[in-house]
Length: 98
Image (cartoon, rainbow, N blue to C red; front, side):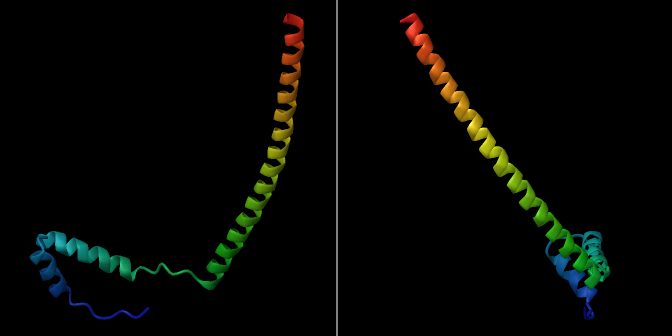
């Protein structure tokens, strides 16, 4: 990244004219300058690692989706069986108490 020279005096004066005190303006400028000069750039190797992690997560999500589909089908069958059993019991009770 190319760093251009910055007129810090001008920036501090602009911040002061906007209502900031001099210490506040200097603190803002220091924070921006410090953040801009820290090396937070990923290397190609780090990017590849992140891509591999993302792909592994996608595979995990697909496995979870498949497992949830199986559970959903089992639940539907069980609830259907419970519903049929309930209807049968109501039919028997209706004949018995009618």
